[in-house]
Image (cartoon, rainbow, N blue to C red; front, side, top):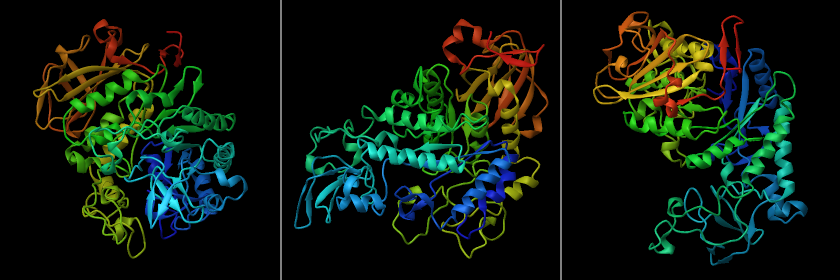
Length: 555
């Protein structure tokens, strides 16, 4: 969703819709004053709203409206770099007082328009990460585009500036931040070349980011201390009752071990969680990669920490364009029944697709635009997103049928299923606090994923069976799970025609893209079975007291 270019209140007008999805928190991407060219990642002023989105008063009214609805707001923040138009950079390139060292400058040679950089370090977008500045007559370092110079976080004044910006927005009332690109915050102080992936490659031809091992420019010693200092600043604003401030970190491209480090240490908290975008990379039906994503996160997550899952995002192709529209419902069922926090990119609840082309005059990587098309509210002009003559990106061609209004009138739609799933997720203790036990894979092609959600003190279990295969499967759950009755009740299904009915657990039929949430009573819990001990997980163990109607930790 978003604050529209027309000046219409956008998000604020849609808060009731968001609440009806049982969503608790709204996450807004970068809106700071900056160039649209880099999707607002090169910020010119961290304390200003870009005029294309409105005014600071508009933003303050939005925060108040979000809180009035009982919702929370988190915002993007990229502390690693600024725009080269930022006043700090202009002062730094002129060697003005303390700002002289706000960025990373080094001597380099520049003769007849040709720059010889200090070393072989590369930008994420390719080619040297050093750019010669005609004013200062030195090269500055940029991990991303040359218009996005990296800040020098070894300078205490820079650290203090960022701390004050965090405080500024917390005092405005935001409930937390998504900190992007944090692994780039520090670089090695030496200027040694990074090792080539292919040692036999001619060094003069190494221009792609993937052709180097980035041992000196990512995840340096001290980087996590900086993120923990952000946490300490935010914790001071969490002391007000009911106003906990959330901290999430982006960890794109990191190994699972490095990703888990963002959770912090046993007695030193860092992020509430690093964002788990691994499901957004799935581009073919099947369960092998999916199982790896789920189990890798759960097996490596530190004890007592909280997982999260997302199937789409602004930097990824939409799910329906990657896997097909047959899988949108089963994937939403997956993230809303796994333990932890589900994160939904706008439009995934109705099954929006990528647009086919961006049709922009500016130079962009089209792959970064196709999932950013306007939200499809209805079948009117511009899909109800804008009252203007046109939108920055075109509307998807299917908006006449794939939109909120149309799906609200259908007996069963992706939107209505999402609402039921999110309501179940929000209100059932088994999903919000229960154990997760990955039973395994089954079905005719082994592509049906089966797991349970269970909680000590409740004699009720939810079993989830999801068919990610490309054909119909018949599943014998009775052979896989002890304590399972001969028949079970269907709590929720992607196929509304069978909801509420009973199924024979020895022969459960699941069509392509089908998902079932089954409910049954038992005294036998899978998380007590030795054979499944390594496949059962819980973040914070709790038990339910039926006598008192409360959760307790004295299990």
